[in-house]
Length: 404
Ligand code: ASP
Ligand code: MG
Image (cartoon, rainbow, N blue to C red):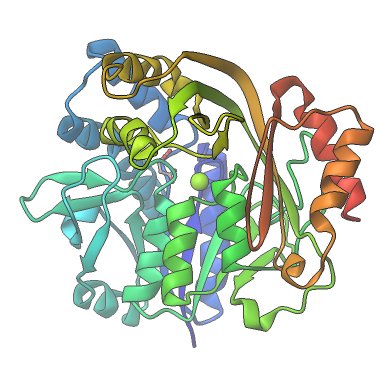
């Protein structure tokens, strides 16, 4: 007998039909003699609809009230699934985050889980009950409802697996597993059997949408293996596990991309200590995330150019922050470009294989794709390119690194 955490995403519980199907999957696992805790997302599209309702009320909708609102989608799906299980003759019950409670900090809209009380649910599942927990939700020490960031029911699942010490954490979703790239961009995309936490974290952060990056990070920190698998097909899925359990046959494991990037260049800033800090401090304090950064010194050695990338949606805000701080950040001029994409190759195998960088750049050059900025870590190389070249770049890299 095993104790299992099973998480079902929004499309898996997207319709009544689908919820019945999920109930049957859960029943089967339960009939096998396992103790089961289920985590559900809201029905597909529900959270987006709630978000847009809040925006119709106010552009600056109160963040605490937003959490009350957007956490409600999960209440609907957890009760529907519990009802469907009861209908199949299984003892089942839903729990909302505040009922357990799942205690979080009070960083509304992207809270961190601090603690989860386990006794009541442990008793329930050891008496053959199936516990159905609303993902995404928490409650702060001030007894206010919180949420864990978009896609946060993945994080709920990892935390439940941790606090309840379950034997497995399975993420049921609408794809076969983690794929080498987005199949909508390149139909040669293949399922990956095993991927390390580190690689998965890069993939998720760099644009692969299957799992929430914070959830991957949490699983990495606590070494909670994750099994990503399909709700619709009975297939083997992808195991996200520790690096030491994988032997890398390929240099590159996957290709990720993100669109809607913008680039800002500040030309002619004085080249002296503290300037980069003066540029990025006000931007950071205004909650704009800086991604890539490049600084090049000009030939006279007196001035430098600082280029950085941000999300397109933050461009206007960023430009006005720089403008407001103009007396502090002396510069000649600013240029910007807002239709850019970041394409990344990811693979722990590249640590041990020289020549990956040039291979990537050469194959992009052969397709006439101009690289606007580069950033690297031990296990990834990202390039910034024109957004309309995204598909071309992903396809050639997928082929170059033998993922086809
Ligand atoms: N329903 C939430 C969202 O759409 C959480 C989740 O689906 O993981 O972001
Ligand atoms: Mg999700």
